[in-house]
Length: 466
Image (tube, rainbow, N blue to C red; front, top):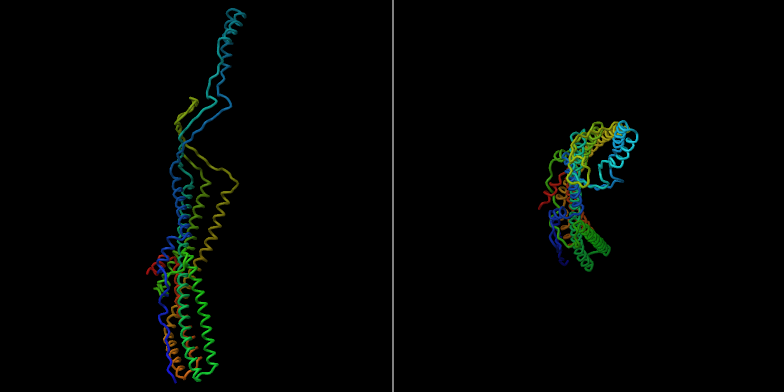
């Protein structure tokens, strides 16, 4: 029997796939996404907007100072009519003349005074005038309206910060999944390629043995079918990798998919489940938003109660410019203004009832959310442990599968094994290698989900820093 050469499969499946292109670590991809992602930038803008609104609410404690300028056109000049005084003066003089000199003298006196005296009208305000003044309003007591508004805007600002962190975590977790999906697809392709190479070598040996009459045609056909299946599997793996690369490139806002991923799938350090559970109750984004909602309702309640109280404000005004304004108008004034609503159809009372019902609903929702968060942490942690156990199990069987393939290949070459033994050994090794990759992917996928769920965004960046 002639000696035939067997080439063993290439090892090192868990190393980064070597493709020509720009090196790209997961840490670099994460930092680029934090810096350039449009949705993250939009959430940062929302935070700035909420911060400006909050600053504006604080400013309500300060006085309001404004400039008012007005030009006014009246339908006529404003005058004080003193004609009755003129008439009285003429009548008194005429009466005195009549008493002293007779009716003729009285009539003459009246006529003379009518002609001599002007119209008795005192001008007060011209028809057109212009005035400019500086006005001041300083709230002294609002029943808590200003404080309630400030507290509400503060909670909206904090909620926007929580939403920003949630957006960052969601996008970063998606990026990690896409990055490792490319790694998984590339390494699956490598496993399929090596399996095909092994089966093609087995096909070459089988063809030689068939020619020597040491192998049946049926066994050779089984080898050919196995090679065809391996070729199809490799083609599918290639398409999967190509698609995964396009998805990752789109997330990174890249036109090309020609990059080399340098961060391998690996087992990362895991803290105790108690650590994640405790942090999740404090930092889970949904629970933090519920807390903001609770504080917001408290602010709304304070504002609603303030509607039953009076408001008191200091007001003042100082005239800085006038043209044709009446002299009787003051140059400045200051005073207090008190306002209080007496009846508005019970809307304020109904608003308090609505807020109370919303708080009751929020209490019930929060209790359920806390339970779901605890369950979620346990779920992701359990999935991580399952993946780790699967990975450890695979390590024990991988060497056995490799040795089984080697022995069956040697035995087949020397006529002591069937072709199906080699095929089955290769399929078993391929399955073990794929299970190893899947365990690593599942571990990392559930790990980043756990970090997001428990509010450990910074730990996510730290875990894949290098």
